[in-house]
Amino acid sequence: MAQKTIFLTGAAGFIGMHTALQLKARGDVVIGFDNFCSYYNPSLKRDRAKILKDNGIHIYEGDLTDSCALQKRASGATHILHLAAQAGVRYSIENPKAYVDANLVGFSNILELARLFKLPLVYASSSSVYGANIKLPFSVEDPTDKPINFYGATKKANELMAYSYHHLYGLPCTGLRFFTVYGPWGRPDMACYSFTKAIIEEVPIKLYNMGKMKRDFTYIDDIVAGTLGALDYMGGARVYNLGNHKSEELLYFIDILEKSVGKRALIEKLPMQMGEMRETFADIEPAKKELGFSPRISLAEGLPLFVKWYKEYHSA
Ligand SMILES: NC(=O)c1ccc[n+]([C@@H]2O[C@H](COP(=O)([O-])OP(=O)(O)OC[C@H]3O[C@@H](n4cnc5c(N)ncnc54)[C@H](O)[C@@H]3O)[C@@H](O)[C@H]2O)c1
Image 1 (cartoon, rainbow, N blue to C red):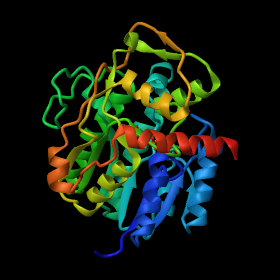
Image 2: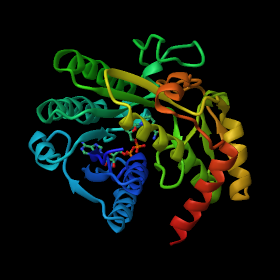
Image 3: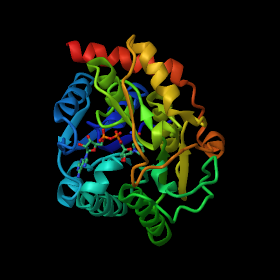
């Protein structure tokens, strides 16, 4: 396969760092872009950037709202992989404006960049687009016009915006609906990290809907494999689910974390929170057929790998 030069936004992020390393390992060139924002501790992003630097990958510091910076830095790229975003469901209830800037204004700048430079685009969407959908598993054919939080609404908007650029300008664009990604170097605001921290520090874990929640948890290496598959299979305006195709009880997730940490969790059960989905579950057949996507890592295998990283990182 011909070498690609990927303009990778969100390179200092969780999924961005792992994807950059795999792209480099298979012989592609990566141009990183990130604003190192303080949504969560930027020192984790700086540490990820250092790993990339040690592997010959540079991250340019810049913001998605700065279209000149995007155009300057993307020069020479053959593809755009757009992973930068204001992530997080709960924060979108407190601060929707941050999502307008990064996910709507920023995304339109990415589309313009792709149009000007004639670059195929792969971008991160989310299982949050399924919102109030109750049919399981979630299929890309299901309606997604009832997002129940603003984060999900911005991700759905991205899919619609991308479709119109495809229709008007022939832009090849692929959206990837990631389902709860976890693994080493993961995000502090997500369950895997925050529950592990709480168990180690003996602080209660807040469980909404009295703990009756289910998620399709996807290990980072599987997400990266699916993302690389999408970069290699471009054309049209496509959307895929990238999940593990298993809907797991949150209490089972905690059970494995407890065993991996070697301590019991303290649990505080609370009523359902606005904006939360009760269950996510990905139908991954199209991604299997077209992207060669085949998730391999179970929670029982993946969570101990996260806990091992967490302990090493925090003792270093
Ligand atoms: N991790 C998951 O479970 C998950 C699930 C569904 C969708 N996603 C999506 O996948 C993508 C990557 O997620 P992640 O978990 O790696 O998140 P992350 O927050 O670790 O990475 C996103 C990166 O984007 C950067 N960024 C944010 N706003 C920016 C801006 N305005 N300009 C430039 N850079 C900016 C951040 O500094 C960060 O490094 C995001 O689009 C997210 O919405 C993630």
